[in-house]
Amino acid sequence: MVDKVLIFDTTLRDGEQSPGVALTTSDKMEIAHQLEKLGVDIIEAGFPKTSPGDFEAVQAIAREIKGSQIAGLAHANPEAVDACWDAVKVGVAPRIHVFLSSSDIHIMHQLAKDKETVLEMARAMVARAAGYCSDVEFSPMDATRSDREYVYWMLEQVIAAGATTVNIPDTVGYTTPGEFAEFITDIRNKVPNIDKARISVHCHNDLGLAVANSLAAVKAGARQVETCINGIGERAGNAALEEVVMAIKTRRDYLGVETNIKTQELYRTSRLVSDLTGMSIQPNKAIVGSNAVRHQSGIHQDGVLKMRETYEIMDAKDIGLPSGGGEIVLGKVSGRHGFKARLEELGYDLTEEELSRAFMAFKELADKKAEIDDRDLEAIVADKLRTMEEVYRLDFVQVACGDHAQPTATVRLVAPDGSIKADAALGTGPVDAVYRAINRIVQVDNELTEFHVKSVTEGIDAQGEVTIRVEGNGRSYVGRGADTDIIVASAKAYMNALNRMLSVEKRQDAEVRTSP
Image 1 (cartoon, helix red, strand yellow):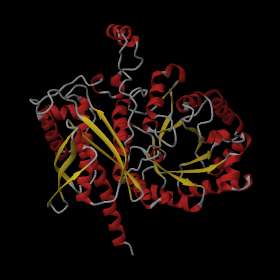
Image 2: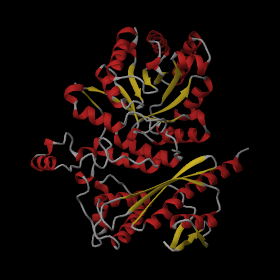
Image 3: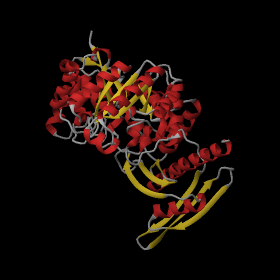
Image 4: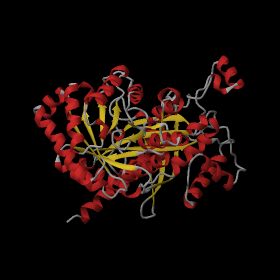
């Protein structure tokens, strides 16, 4: 029987630590459901002790997700372990993940404690966690820069205290594949009770080696890999789930293991995480980048046309790329049934209400654009079906501009009470004028910190997709919008971000009013 490697996904915890990313509870729930659909074994839903919002999100995910284990992260202190248990205990198979630094530089400069005290903290907090549940993971943070003998000693103690998974983090992306494989082998040989725990690895990408190090560890005996969708995370990010999984699938002959991941959901999951975090995927990104299955060289094109395997080691359909890259085209004469069937093939399971909204948007686009392919459909779903309360709705936008004219925008919004609010403003450009007009109506303090525009498809009639980020009330909010008119797309994206901000403020006000 082939060995299984468990996939532990930390997109909702370490991934959210990417600079500028701030996911709402509804965002996290949407991603969690897709990770469950993907077949992820363990979802690290967050860090419950850090904030009431994170606690609420972890608890909600643990309560709702049944097909994946739900884990929460905890510092090695009683309050954090207790909070973690309170958040995950409603899950079907809860896991508490305790971490504590093991490297001399962390112990000396961050913890300011001696090694014996740190060791006792690790042992005691794992024992505390084990008193709550039978599935406890422990991570000696910065393990790859730690004294190895100390790590072996720490692992032996925490396993004896109840740890069932010991995770070896390359916290700052310092190690190399051969070195890391040797470390895992030494752990297997030098920790007396290692047979009572699964070895896991958590690699960062500071030197671009996160996936390579993870695979080297698997070859050396690790049977859990910690990943993030699209490789997001602190600094240069984490090992990318899609790269680790497809490497294991493609090179099963060498690695001799397999995963439980449903690879046909990889593309859909990647796109969802990109949409909700606002972090675009580079075109040459392995597995899920737009260029990953494209060929420009004449020699390559000739080879692929004769036999795909000449220059492709993976079938695009295996990762869920629609029809190998958008070959199916719909148009204005396409009906609701065909539209629904195509969305289902792309992995979207919509309610009747959601389908109606998406179909109306499709028909509107079909009046402007002769051919609509899968990328357009994905943009429609991303634009129309975000699970977020729409406080203000964009009703009308018009601009006047030119190289000898002052850009002017008129905007009309539907307010929360149903009334119509309209205003106009001048700006340095048409988008700036639109945003100033919207601000005059909505009147919430914010700062635009990022503006990104790209074409969804090729051609002069392509949809433009705008991604923006605004800062307000100490948080970052991502907004997206798509339209064949880039000014309208920009207005949609701005309203999307502002509605996120207003929804959070509304919820916080409600919590204050109901608190004792």
